[in-house]
Image (cartoon, rainbow, N blue to C red):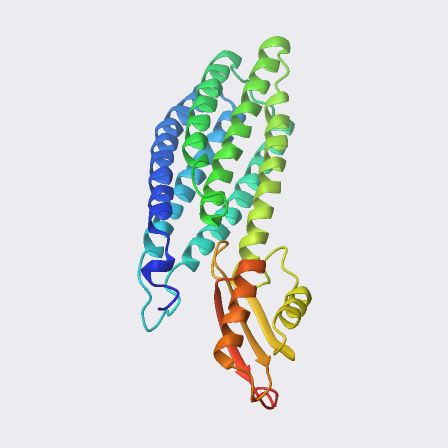
Length: 298
């Protein structure tokens, strides 16, 4: 059965992830409107920056939701692996969006430092506290989903960055109320932007690694090759060994194995599959057994 078929799709987990993202999207959009109004009334860059990030979050969550729905499509002759990789594309796009948001916040904060704006501490504090509550609710909704799913991780990272933004706005509001120091607003905004940038870079790096068909983290190809030769006596050599990931949870391996002409091919094949599955968690394997020169060596 092709990898994109229903048996390998984990429909229950995917449906649960999709529902969580939909609920988190509803919470995010509802509060984003409140935060924009509060930011304009208070004149707070921290609130407007957080509202801008929530707008990016709403787009990111919408993209994540769309990705889950697209990935349910079955494989077809044009896409024999199905549409699972769309989730990784969504995570990559969400990471780039976070980087752009962090850059925008930083530029606006620098401009505010050179041209200070009066900020109303009390309205800013009230809206920031409400924003923190809304973000915590959205994060709690997403937190119960699959941790290894990059699409879910991207959605959670967006909301986690919102939580940081709300905390930054609360701290800035308290400082402004206590001291009247307006620079606290843009300075704390830059601090939040740096934290957002760090998480965004990790997400972009991981999703790009998968899109470039890099070897899954923690997997040593030399160790895998030696494990096969040690556990399956008939295997003389392992070459053309490639391991990559369709998504973060679906690693795939292809390899050629040289065996004697009198070896029981079916038994060797089963033994290789067992080693790949039990020792390395590689359940999707394409194995070519060779009793002579490798036809791909030329």
